[in-house]
Amino acid sequence: MSLFLLQKRIGTYPWIAFPLFYAFGTRKHRAVSLSSDLVIEGFPRSANSFAVSAFRMAQDRAVSIATHLHQPCNVIRGIRLRKPVMLLIRDPISAVISLKSLYIEKRQRRVSSSTLFTPSFKDLFTWYTLFYESLLPYRNDVLVLRFEQVTRDFGKCIEDLNRFYSTHFQVFNHTPENVSTIFSKRFHIGPNDLREAIKQQVHLDYEQSLPYIKYSVDQARDTYYKFVNLDPSSL
Image (tube, rainbow, N blue to C red; front, side, top):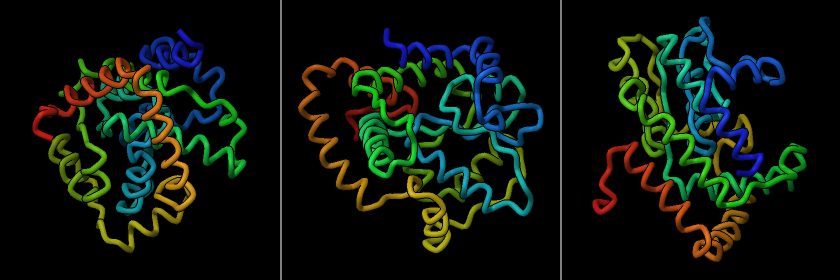
């Protein structure tokens, strides 16, 4: 197992992950705590940033959102603390290609030294499987939202959250104007021409790699279908 995947596996165990995060992490406000209002979490490129921005925009008060650890431990502890949890999920091929493209885009924009290392397709698909397989036992304890639901009508997503948890959060008005405002906050939230060009090359690289990583891709897709309760033959 690579060091990259070892770090991701640690993230499935709250009793290991949180002490390490509090000791060495730089963004401790992302971790769920007693003061958190809710958790919004998911594998990267599953509309996490959009959901957080839209949720905050809709509220008439400041809300504390545990988010962007991109680790199952944040969800598991959120459940144990009885916090509302939005767990976001996206088709693994789309998520991994988008994430690979973002790594490259950040490197080209020189916005993060951490992107000098780009994980392999195999590691990213394995991470995806590890992330959601570790949360399958908690599947019915959280509100699971697909990428398409979040990006098409996040107002309904908040309504579903309120019904699921008997909460009273205000609903997002999913208008083109509000979406544009959110996209303008940071370059990575919405699509852009540079990333779309990068994605074309990354998709070609994925197609060339597929014979060697097919098992990892199939595992990730099986996990996705289990999680969203979809029959792949119906798609």
